[in-house]
Length: 499
Image (cartoon, rainbow, N blue to C red; front, top):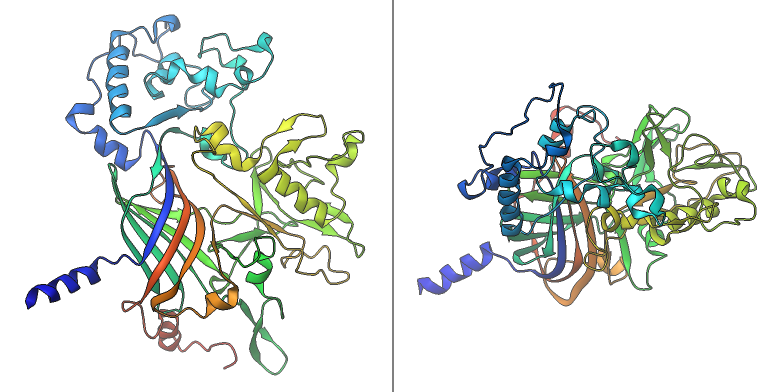
């Protein structure tokens, strides 16, 4: 009779609480990613130890036209080709080689480049090779960088930071675990095998999300709702299909003070509605959290996604009014180009951001602008029809601006958020909040998307999206009880709000 018990124990250790139908895309930093370095160390794919005929970057007589004609380079290309085919890797490298540390030096550029990519660099990476004007085509010599304007994404602006390998495909799971955590949160964790190591990923959301703040009412402190009687999740979900509930995974988000861009307003941990997480082999990740500002490299400062308004709702300052905005107004009246740079009100600003990220359109000069959420397709070799990447733009118009407060950016009104991490449930918020552990009489269905990046500073990024159907929810038996915050509060004799 021991066998059934053993099988029960094994089943409990290998839960299958959900069905997940998803896709993944891994952007490995080619030079420093741990999985890539580990696989390359294998004898079959070790880089040849041959010597180049030209190897001194300080030489006075570098023969540029012979750099890629070297027998050693041919050997490297052969090994590289086998390596890419063995692990289904698609290379690209759109770094700008005119600046440091390459400085247009042919040997430094060759030694940094993925072997074989020299034949694709100009066609893929130069804006001049992508336009309709044959008169400005690159000259075929990648060392002549003055005829190449390197392309890059607006949202995924990391795509030209390093050389990358892309690997993407379907998620094949071997473990799916759904939990109600000790904090009362709903968590789904998925495990999958890859040739690069074991991968696990998932998300956590707070079904009862209702952020609060501690305020002093004159008689002491008290906890009150951050947004009064407004239901945050219901407002997030208002633009979705009826009967669905949207959660922004906004852990770690922060705003930037528009009046002093050196000051960041970090969200309280209690304001996090959810978080995505992943571990790739031995490489942990950070969530690519919600953006409430963009970093402007031209001015080395942040431009908040915020506009100030007067009491009539007219925009009086903020995004688009100064600085160097990355997302200009699209689909506006081209007969009056000056008006296209001035948002009329918050609704106009919001619509412009949605055009920039989700719809695309024409700018004031009549040029076609592709949606920023298509960056991975346009510059990262990941077609939208193979991986439907979607960036959601958070509408905060439901957070009403009090009279005379239209230039006070310390709240959320007049802001938009940009988020590639979200979970959407095919159920009402009240039903979601009522979920209990155990077998679900009605499966919990929904879809999700996650964007994460490596904790080890390798510059690798990875993303997952797809649908789920949860049929069983376990109760977490490993969490803190009492919770760690409560333990530390008691240990340090820290008073809670209202005490």
